[in-house]
Image (cartoon, rainbow, N blue to C red; front, side, top):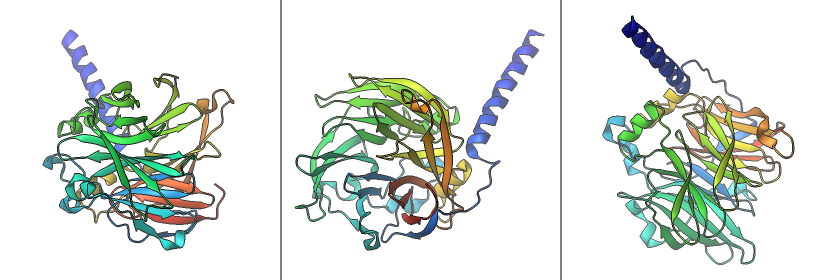
Length: 367
């Protein structure tokens, strides 16, 4: 009798776990296309626009050419191995010009540079932009720091330093809090095939690492498949596309984080854009998980794309105690597949993708 009860308990746990995985994969979902206005692809981006960081003068820095580093068992499309790491620049003040490829230092060209998450820090005294870039090197995870001087750089980036820390396990995104201090996410503990098992078993082995100007990294939060980071008014945000949630942390004076809220968003939110004026959070999102995975194995297979806006409606001292969610953009994958990032300036919307195009929209609907 006892063994029967144990067996029933095990079966119930397994079924519950399978149910969670089915929800994540989105087999129950249908995507209906709607755009907030006229949208079109941005030339010449073709190998992804995984993350977008916006400077204070409306310049969007875009990471492109991400080569997904997992084991062969995952079946990533072999064309992805030929991608070239690049940083593009898009000027919201002149959107008709498209995106321009930035000039990288010689040491950052070729296989050495495999960019993922990015963020900017603006020095108002000098007008210089500090650009932090997660870089998946062949044998290590690093954060590269560049500077950009719009007046004197001729569209080129100057490399300042490379950050290496023992806590850098499987980096995904970076969040700058000064020109010498930042947070990064490890989306898992492992960098190789074992990461797939982390996702499959929903293990809470990912982390947020705080790196100070004095050097050294400190793990300040852990969770399941933590992905992108953002900040606003003493708060730090972290997404989980796999868990389909947004974590809201209070940032303490010493840089440690205190979890305030974990918000179920109901879709695979990826990179965060924090609106500088409204405090609204915008996300590129993956509404159907299995379609996203199929897209990574065959780039010709479309994956639905989605842009979500999260509006805080709580009291002033705790604005994210309640929220409203809005879907601003949805596409079956014909215009853009696997939307991973977004940036907003006025009624202008820029949408990035994991492995393909960059899309620009003129929004004519309320946002």
